[in-house]
Image (cartoon, rainbow, N blue to C red; front, top):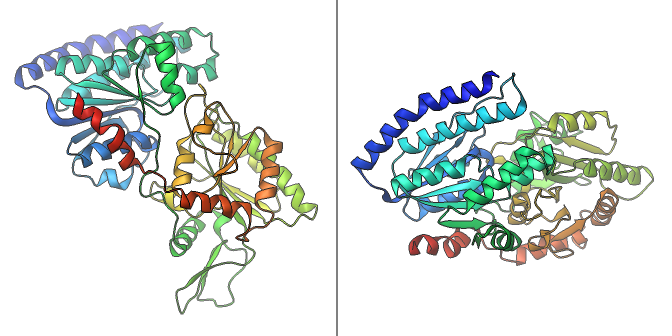
Length: 465
């Protein structure tokens, strides 16, 4: 029973000084027309779209304050931008006592007070950009500050928070129903709304009464194909920690450098791909309930069986990046497998190494299903930016991104994914194979990058308001 009293204590202690600060700020100055605040009630380093917003705002003359948790390193471009200041939010660790719903209440109150304090300590802004989800309690807090300081609230709808909660608690749980009511009510308080798909835009309009503009995720400029010499450097670097990148045999010239995939000549410095090298698969995952990782494991087992039966297929190195609650569970499952021709590693890469890995890979795998069916996997956007073909599990609006048989393949289950892997790697690495045709299609598509998309879609909205 101590939890609600803790919440009340936090609120009682935090609110009076906040109100005094608010009064002082309103008396001292108004909002700054060329300042924007970007709010992520989550890990900034794992929120690329909001980092891109901050970079775009800075590029078009805004000074930017980026609020969020700093558990992972953001992009170097953001860290080195003089117009962007990162302000750390304090993360409350899960309490060990009390009912779950009371623990959640304490967390929400703490987040609300902490976010309110940080916002009021920041320079007043013309715009507050907020990522949703998570929107509880951030939407109400940002709207409140906007009312006091004359800031316009811009909500960027990546998904629905209540649908993600529903994966854990079930759709009829009281917390899920409360979150849905809150999200629907407070979501209407914004001045501008952005969303990630056309289907979400329609759903927001029809079921929520919210008019939004679709801003598709687009790759940043640093997601591109990786030159062979940089691939080699990356493989050698990763090889210090992960055996999957280390060569299984030494080069004849002891002065040469060799990874699993590449070799650098000691005299000329020329990098070449090894003959008979394995294929490199990359799957970026959040290790959560909306990604059924067992699909990939079963498909890999079937691929292994095909090689053992005599099929002319390459061995595989499967790199699965990311952090999340189910990583330890699936890592144990991987450890119990006895693959002979497949090596699996699960690194957490530095921000600057992830684009290099995608630009070096042969195929991307996406297991994202979407809790609402209305968002799109940004990991696929990044893969396409690197001209990396993708096999992606199907869901409601995936067609807005992945074009089956054009830039990749869509599958329904492990059986279909295994068949696709067999087909794609049957001629590997011959340029006449289907895999290279998909890559060529991506190279010729001249994809729009984030900067240009943001300039066309978002900048006019800011100019007009």
